[in-house]
Amino acid sequence: MTKGAFLRIDRDRCEGHGQCAIMAPDLLHLDDAGEVVIDVADVSDRMEAARKAVQACPAIALSIE
Image (cartoon, rainbow, N blue to C red):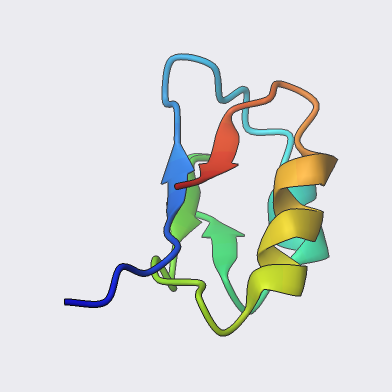
């Protein structure tokens, strides 16, 4: 079985800045309540965009596992 790389949000840390969604709009978005929503969880083939999103998070709430 092949393991993928997945985006994860620590909801306790997320402050809804939205920088991740700005950096990777094809992977994430903010909903109407300002919550980050992961649209593409398995980012194995989109690692560059996923890393940019993780690095952009000022609350360090987003990670790749």
